[in-house]
Image 1: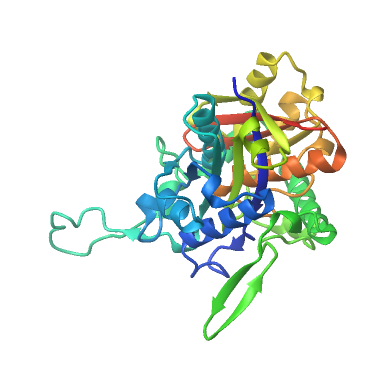
Image 2: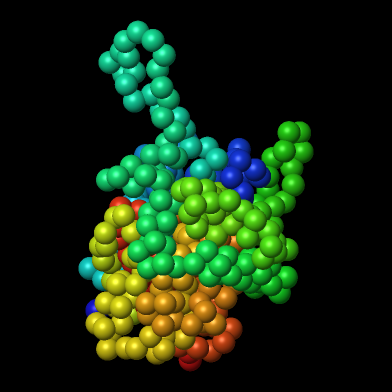
Length: 394
């Protein structure tokens, strides 16, 4: 099997919903991140033979063809290929795996894998109007609402998080503690410059002027435990899931180079980490947040590894209960998980999240000299993913 390695790895700053990035087409965000990734890797776009793009909510005029428009706008040759993938909140991770699979089968050598969302630009749709809607008012459907509901019960994803808290009797206080730590860690990572190394500043148009956006817009590092405790449940009366212990809806894009090691080194690229293995599992949709636990467990068993053999974990904070569940069920220490913030603080654009987490995990391994990291997330509809990567130490 080809040795699959990572290089580059950059993203846009993530914009809060309806704020700084709402007027920037998603394809522009993707192109910006892809170009920055190539600069960081020291690669020309002409060296990339495949681009894989993950996205959940299609937006803008090029939505159906966004992988192709980003590829060509990044400077890739017209005879290269592109692919659009969707695996709910694991779409960015799936982009990485799909790129890796192309390389493993000999159909690619050096690929770009990324994804993004601009939920602020999500359209409303008139589903019944094509063939005439009859008399009376016609109801528009919010495409975001379609994406954020369980496809079986039609409840919002936050309701499935409430189901998980009830099934295992996880406490609101524990989830708020996780949320507070996420915000504090994101604040520290911004202050130290750790996140800045992963973010490509972008020019934002504002009326007749422009400004440079350099920092994620969603983190609230000064939030207090008292403030989090004061928030009312969002999804269920008397529930435990609040806006404070849920992921933030944000806009942004991220890309990373995925390559055959020999091909990358032949182009003068220094590999940063390698792809070891992965697992994708299904879980009961009503508790979709349980997904990381069986995915990580199955991956570790397949590799004959223990939880503590992995030095660092990035587990997506779709809801804090997802992380509390993984911590309780697998025995993963909070001291080796999401040390730089996560979905609750940085935000969670599903198409970009898995790529962002991979970039962060690689940066952590390079900084610490540690060996292994796992990137994992739950997915709407009831799935879980876990990817094992290894630091390349020369």
